[in-house]
Amino acid sequence: MPTTGVAAQPDLIRAPDGALLLSWIEPQAKGHALMFARYANSAWSSPREIARGADWFVNWADTPHLAVTADGALWAHWLRKSAAATYAYDVALVRSGDGGVTWSQPTLVNDDGTPTEHGFVSLWPAARDRLGIAWLDGRNSGGGHEGHEGHAATGSGPVPAAMTLRTAAFDASLQRHDEREFDAMTCDCCQTDAALTSRGPLLVYRDRTPEEIRDIAVTRFVDGAWTPAHLVHADHWKMPACPVNGPAVAARGDEAVVGWYTAAGDTPTLKLARSTDAGTGFTAPITLDQGAAVQGRIGTAIGDDAVWAVWTREEAQGQSLWFARLASDLSRELQRGEVARLQGQGRATGFAQLAVADDAAYVVWTDVVDGKPLLKGQRYSLAP
Image (cartoon, rainbow, N blue to C red; front, side, top):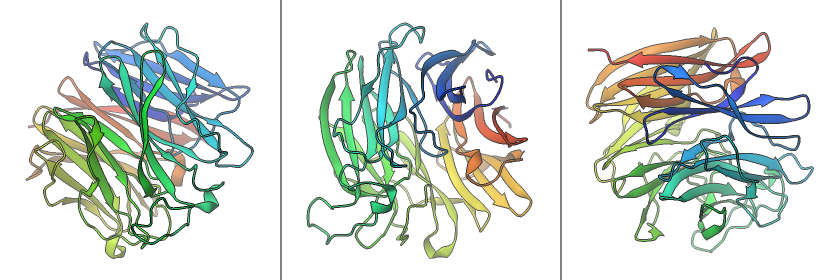
């Protein structure tokens, strides 16, 4: 691993050239720094700093992400406090045109000016030199996290006190374009995720109805507009509060896979569903794991001939991180194993990251050793 000390909140992506990019947050004497490194030819580069600040919102679940556009530019975001309230923060975005040597001045993704929550970001290349971005936006919530329990009759329009999902695009000069509110009522603090199919971006998130059904929804960007959202599968999970357990999506050509956690029927379950038409429709899901120990926090990836998943379990003896490799059509399981036994427990270990490159899967996760968060990693080559 390229990290040498205390580090957490990792993000791991595969760049268009096949290299892996890892970002993480390190504490500083005053504030925090967002760092990144590149993995290519079986070696990590020296870490580089993206940004640092003393006014950041640093959280186990709402973490920074990286993206790469076709022009070679790197993009990164983090969260910056906007007021004294705990959950008052904005999304800051930067771009580098020289491989991460220098970075632009940050611009705010959300410009509403309200001291509310903005985060749980997804990034994707929207054009050769343009970034697409989606985020959960609390501008209608009227304040802190406590204000997320608003209700309204179905079809009554924008819902006061509800978290919303917004999307936009940013060009190479960090100018905002085509911002819109896509969903007026979503789960409050479940991660969003996006993947690029052969037919355009695919965006997944945990929806929320006035009846408190919180299932996974998906939308596609087609001909300059987002398609109406539809459920990956109707779990009918009625949940009066946010589980902080968002979906993960991976895509390769027309193939797409969504993984998610649900506790419908009071049974913690991890599911996977597959699409062969870039997210237009999904097969009936398979159950990846089930039972009281299942924490979820899933990551997914698609390789040349297999689907990979990584997730967290927690039992009386502690947490463990697991992986599975399945046939591309999810018809059979090819590998399953325990990645690691974790010393950390609860939320401190955050969300593991998964990426596939060079016929191998790479997993990066946070553990807590002697009270300090550290990043660890593992590489899995293909097994017969």
